[in-house]
Each structure stands twice: as structure tokens, then as C-alpha cells.
Image (cartoon, rainbow, N blue to C red; front, side):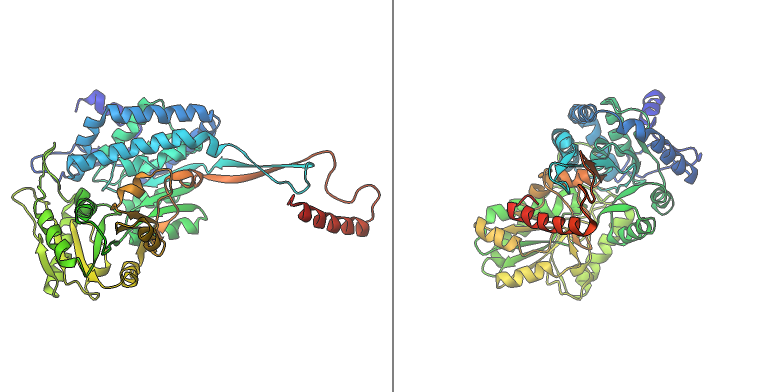
Length: 511
């Protein structure tokens, strides 16, 4: 990378410690350029600068902010090849799965550009005294938003929360994961090319336990995407400061395959739902429950389809499933699957690392015979692994699906829309996809996305994902007469008059 282009990319990075972060690519023979590391003083400096910029930014017209998001959408499409390469090099995912990030982020940008002005405009509410009290609710920005983003979707998850935050008039400081810094940096650089002014969004780098924690101590609201264990720490730290937090955390996502399901639909959906990004996404399916009447047929066909998936570990097209992102994750996936097999689970396919393809490539794995006492039955694997189990009744399937501390995403495969909706309504899950794995719900960016149970707090996407970055302010203007005894009434007579007035108002349905 030329020094001039590198300097341009790093213009919004606050890092003066003198230390460097050196990520290791999952691809053999591919190097990732080092990135300067931020100090704790840099975090405070970045937030102070963001706070100084926030008043001016919130004073800009919403139409101006909307235009920036519109232009950013176009920049993403224009620069997609460069972005796909950056994502692949850092995460190891296949190029087709990297494209999910670019296009998903573009959809989010277009959505908020479309709804932003109306969603943020003042809303009229009934006043205490009809006609005499004019009441409006304003959506005021919260101030400085801290975003702590993960490595698995480094472009989308570092920028997607920043878009509604800045649209609402906030400024933002992002702490991306140290494995995937360049994807976040390039995303922010495209926002700058779209017209985002200095100081509205900045980046700090470094360890989550230090730099991430320091960021939470400074900002006015925090967005975190990651594990449930870390999410609890983030929530406690935010709660101690009485600031809000939105948390998208872990999942052990189920798929229910009904007796009337079509085999072709199931195969197409299940393979994509389980092995996109090598299973390294929070909404990936890790449990499949198939009705006993079709279990053997569907399992045999599913295993055969999984065996056909082509593995790869290089930049470019030509394979279906890429690499795990880090050595620590590869070791954990190996340990969890080995433990399950040692305890009696059966490997239908997969179960080993393919170091001949890449150092962190792991075979897509299908297990049967998993019992509740096994770690893999309840803990999120976050890798290319799913277990399959039969069920007898629909109620049993719903109970199996809901038997989890998590509740992020779920899937129902059926030929009956009515049956699919009936089952979906009984699932304890923030999102349910009928005849799709996760893309239908997650891609419907006008609808909120988030978890129940220990899968998180708050929602991204939809108007809910925008208004979380605002504080409602009630503005009530009293006109002509003030509230209190009038026209010579005594306190007693005034009180009686108010009581009678409330009865009249209720009957007229004014209140």
C-alpha cells in the first residue's frame, strides 16, 4: 500500500501509542499490514473530539445527513471489489459470503436514508388541555456513541450501527476487533468520501478489555456485538454509568423441518443457513429438528449435499466455504466437536481440519446422536457445525427449539404458510424465518433485528434501530391561559370543575 493512500485511510484513526497491531490472515502466504494501536489517552482524546464535533453536526439539516448516506450506498457498490478483498484477507470467508456484508450495508444505508427524515421529525401529541396546550415530542441525539464491533462481519458490523447514529445527530467512536481493522477503516473512508465531515466518526484500536472498556467509560451510549459472556460485562459497565446499551450476543439457533417440508427447499436453505461464513455468524443454524416421517430421507440428502461443498483459502472466487478466522477459534471448534464424538455423538460428515487447504480450514460438519448433557447441545460453536435430531410432534419440536438460554434467530421449513406462522409465534426468538435460514429476516432491514433471552438487548434495523440513538424530549406550549384556578373560582370549585371536565372529555373521546 502506498504511503499516501495509507495516510488517507488512517486519517480518522486516533492512535499515538507508538505500538502496532499485527493481524494474521487465515490465508496461507497472505500478509496483513500492521495498524497503529491506540492508548487509553487516545480513547479519551477521540471521545472529547467527538463531543466537541457533536453540537455542530446535530445542527446540520437532516436532509444533508440523508444525502451522505445516499452517496455512501453508491460508494459501497462502486468499491465492492476492493472491499471484498479486504474482508476475505482478514476473515478467511469465501468471496460470495463477503459480498453479503457489502450489499447488506448498502441496503441499511438506503433504508435509513429513506425513513430518516420522517422518523426523526417532531411528533404531535395530545396536550393536557385540548387546543390550549400544544405538545410535541422531539427526538434529540444522545451525544457520543461508542461502537465495539466483532471480527466475523467486520465491514457491516462496524459501520451499520454508525449510520443511524450519525443520521440522528450523534457522533461516533468505533473500536473494531484487532483481527479485522482494515475492513472497518475502509468502510469509514468511504463514508468520508461520501461527504462525512471531520470528527463525526473516528476509530480507536486495541484490546477490548482495555481500549473497549475505556470507551464505555467515556461515551453516552454503547453498541456491542459479540459473545454473551462479554456482553454481560459491557451491560454491567454501562449500567454502572446509567448509560444505555444495545447488545447483539450469542445464539444456538434452531431449524424446525415439518413433515410437509419439500426436500429441495430444505437442502437449499439448510446448507446456506449452517455454513455461510463457515458458520461464523450469530444467526447461523446450529440445531436442525426434522420430523421423524422424513428424517432418514432428509438427513441422507443433507449429508450428501454438505459433502459436495468446495473448500478454499485464497482471495477470489471459486469455493463455497472458507476458513475460520483465528487459530483460537479453530482450536475451540476442534475441541467441541471432538468432545461430542467422544461422548457418543456420531459424525455423519466432516469433523477435521483441512490444513492441506489452509491452516484454519475446517470441514463442514454434521452430527447426530447429540444428547442434552453434551456441551455442543447448548453452547454456541460459531463454526461450520450443526447437529440433526428427529421429533414426533410439533409441540415437541417447539419445546426442543425453545430449550436454550438464547433466542436470536430461528427457522421453520414447511409447505404451509399458516403452519409456519403458527409455529413461529410460539418460538422464543427475536427473528423467525419461514422457508429461509436467516437472510429473509436479517435482510428485511425495515424490521427490527435482535435477541430474546441471553441473545441480547435492544434492536438494530428498522425505526427501532434509529430511535435507540435518540432521547425523546417532550415540549409542551401552554397558550392563552395558564393551568390553575381561573375566572374567580376558588380552589374547591376549580377542582370540581376539572373533575366534571375530565368526565366530559372522556365521553367525547378527546383524551
